[in-house]
Image (cartoon, rainbow, N blue to C red):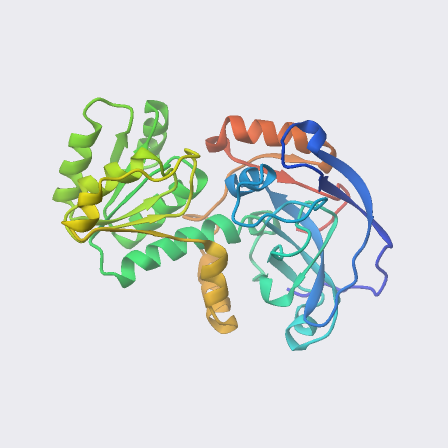
Length: 347
């Protein structure tokens, strides 16, 4: 949907600035910055909402795959309206349109009133797509879609996933159910297991239980689980590989344990199993614009059901430090959204 956009763009904006990778409240500050001007192939997005993701928490500590020069504005994804174009066919097409957008790898991010990004990192929103839901369109829904596409292309009969009670894990669970794909959900606490069972998950295992390995192995053999999606890493990667039959794959896309993957070399040498990584940024880049647009439309149609994001709180930039603590302490409780402009009338 295209919105009427005037040529007026303010000179200054409010932004959340990261000044140190050492952590703590003093590492972040709300500052006034000049509004950037787009160059060729770039667009200026007026941010409506931007979520906090686990990848953001890692970035704030300097532990993510991209480490930017400081000071920098954090935030990997958002929704908003393109209000400026630096020229180029796609950039001109996007002007005035609502979009979901990703931050450039070499520039400021989304936790600000405005963000400069490449036109190719913007996804036009369908008329029925809610702007707030679109703020979290890229990181979780696209990852859930991409991982299950990996399972489909590899003709895998069953899947096991870790961190299954996370927002992304619950999306994968619902999308797998929609596709009729057997899924084993691994969590670390019984209350998380109960949450998934209430949502209809059939196979849920608590990794802290004494019989976890035995039950995991039994389910993987019964359901012919030959691919794992691992957001935890550490020792759990090895447990997943050991439980699956010969030739199985483990796709590591997160490191919630903050530990290296630990596994028995025999799984790789004698059982032809393998471990590989998945990074959403590279996956999206590998898609052409038309493929990306087609995928985005398929994902947007599921935002009200299987790929819906639960929102816990909507906070101004000034409350970012409290919001980050709240999210880090209870990631399964719903998303924290930063709303840069309280008077924004986008919907």
